[in-house]
Image (cartoon, rainbow, N blue to C red):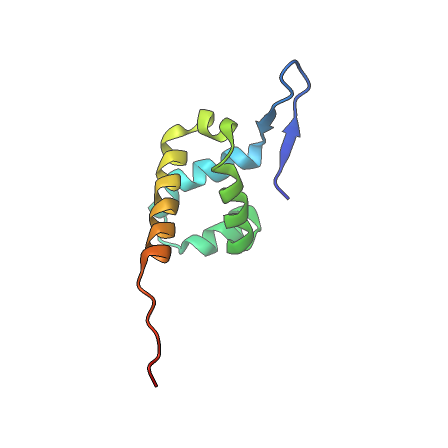
Length: 97
């Protein structure tokens, strides 16, 4: 459940919730802790790493997230794009047996 709140106004845009901002803040600093990222996610957000990643992926396409922390959002978008390229551009190894 992506925690979003509707703001009623002329433009009817979505606003980041506190949890959305906390996720972006966490992405800025998670490596400062000696605990593995998935453990930190479970303790801090009470989410599985998979669900957290789903929420984060949605946030990376959100204009409000970009406005809130453009450096983190752009960094994560670049990382995601590099992983996609590596996955789709890697040669397929066929079993010749």
